[in-house]
Image 1 (cartoon, helix red, strand yellow):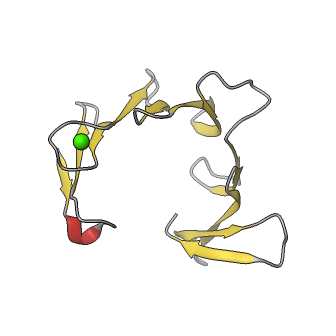
Image 2: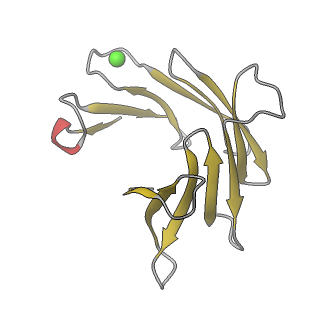
Length: 132
Ligand SMILES: [Ca+2]
């Protein structure tokens, strides 16, 4: 179990994360009431395949070890919530496209991921830069 203190989070509640024996995140208590609120599922290859927050049940589609699309459970295959595009390396996401618009992942010159930049579909309008 890992507890992220409230001072490191938005709002006033700590975040409690629970991990399985393979060190995979299985649940999170986001409101400090000792009841898990968000649940994660993994396949035999260690890939995250589902997330359920009690409101939205998300399904993750993989190509090898890379997540290439997210769907809300029951959504048609032609209507993903997000699509992800990767560069040469398995853990090198470049673009995430979805309901919030395009998100470009930023890297330092040494290749370390520094965050991401959200951009609307209008190329000149940079909305915000956030942690990726
Ligand atoms: Ca809770």
